[in-house]
Length: 97
Image (cartoon, rainbow, N blue to C red; front, side, top):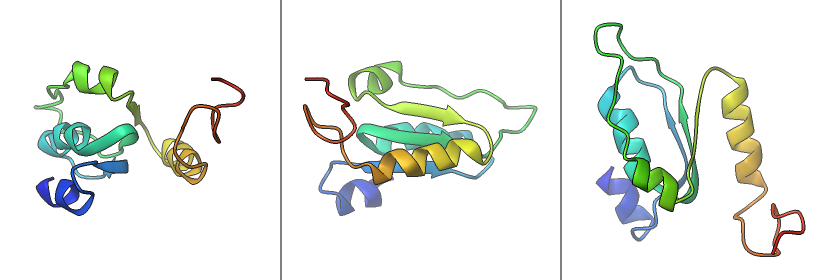
């Protein structure tokens, strides 16, 4: 996680995909995502430990999109990333100011 923050100058990653059966990886994904970042919780968790601690304040204040599931969620994340960052009046805002 720290390597991602270091490589992005503390900004974080625009897209984070967890593909491991690791609750720690899913929790770290939220902490390493950039503002308005997109997170895919692709890897399922073991039946005996299916829960994580999600920092809802990070999700709320960074305006993060957290998706789970197979194939289609990853495609949505990739397509939204190709549209570029959302800036007032810029691409992805569809006329919102």
